[in-house]
Image 1: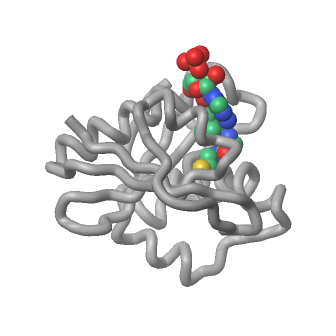
Image 2 (image 1 turned 180 degrees about the horizontal axis):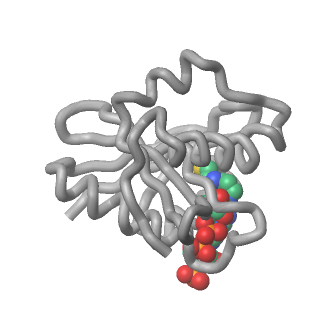
Length: 143
Ligand SMILES: CC(C)(COP(=O)(O)OP(=O)(O)OC[C@H]1O[C@@H](n2cnc3c(N)ncnc32)[C@H](O)[C@@H]1OP(=O)(O)O)[C@@H](O)C(=O)NCCC(=O)NCCS
């Protein structure tokens, strides 16, 4: 498996959007708007690949000079629970650290809180609804 940064608008980016659509949006009856995807030009886009096949992805959006927001973390449905998400998370954190960021924040689906807790993320504040599902803010200082 190869973990790498992806450029917006490339073949890999299209694969990433299809994966996110299948794992994160279609099951909720939702899809991505062109405006939403255009805004990702500024983001750090990350994918895990096995040769030409995308296995997992996530992206990092700048919040302020010290903070990135982790978004759109998704592992192919039939490959979940095999450690791919953990590898991706470590890669994303290392990349954020290398770029000089000191904190990661996110809107975590409640169903995934246990996954992020394994990496030391803590929930902050009350539950809220986003894309029709319960979420919590989770954060971690990068060391
Ligand atoms: C959540 C997700 C990214 C985790 O990736 P994954 O590859 O399945 O997770 P891993 O196999 O790397 O698991 C790492 C550890 O977290 C645990 N874990 C994984 N998913 C979990 C979950 N949803 N809740 C609690 N623990 C979880 C695993 O049991 C494993 O624990 P261990 O180290 O004690 O063995 C992935 O399952 C996924 O894409 N889920 C659907 C989409 C989603 O919910 N995305 C997150 C939106 S905020």
